[in-house]
Length: 416
Image (tube, rainbow, N blue to C red; front, side):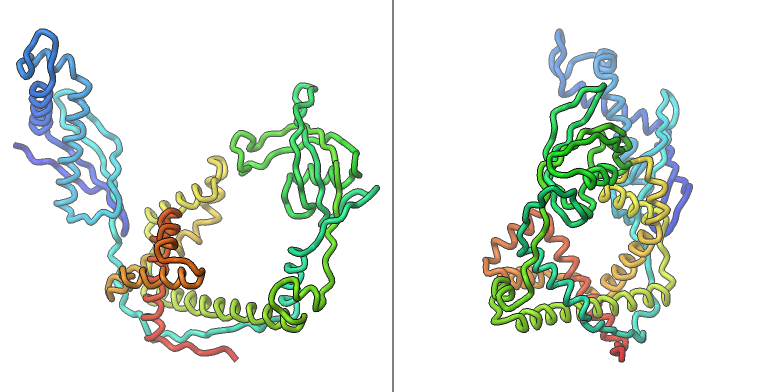
């Protein structure tokens, strides 16, 4: 039987494309197998099972036989390409430009993503600076104000248009062909981007009980796809305006927040929490420096196919409309390239040094989470499994091991 021909047409570090040609005799053999299979297991009126004439089977099941042949030759062609090129695919291959004509070889292009072979010649000897930002008075004030806002009461505002920070209760009705549709109620805090700018601007000029009409346009990336880029006129009525009444920052407030004897104790706790955040950010900064130097020292490249795949994932994650894809890709390409380089570099370190998370380490981390939340191991495991976050937790453990290994071979200096 004639050989299947595999010709490489394109490649980069993470993908390869091949043109595959399956000769006529192999296509004929696949067709004969399909006919025999259908003849064996189907029963047609007027014939005993397995006794229907081949011409009848071909006519009755022509489309199904053709589909069988296509699947069979695609499988054979892919296996030939994978074996001949010693491919190690990380995803299922995709097939393009299929040509299937009677009496002719079947030809198609197969594209497959493969694991890039990343070699790291240097993984240590880097000098890194750890900078812990001091907790500022502005940060402390901001956090205390957040706590005050959580405890604030909302008081009615009489005979006054709303201002930034006020909460308004409104009703908005679309106007179509001069007819006002049923109104929908909304509660909005002015200045927080909770509604369209044109609508918010109109609300700012209305007192309680007043109404107005305004033209609005929905943005191209609006959550509701049916409204993207659409313009319409709406009728808005303000039913209530409230202002936020912040509690005084005193000992009584501190006691209302938690188990604090006075305001000084609350401030100390908030400052300590901010300091822990600063420590975590400093550690993350060290990791980013280490990663930058690791990538630079080893000239790690980002294969275009993986960058494209990452951008595609970003597009779906952010629900970007088709008309904005080009601009989005241009803006986010550097981020996608860094993400790919990061994964390749860390993956190479993990692979070379066997630093992947073990089942025991995963169980230990889940137990720690359960203890911290005062619940059981099984409950936390079930929650993570339901939310599909077990893989995320496993990757976190693996990264901790990788960075621990890398940092042990470099120097970390504390910024003065």
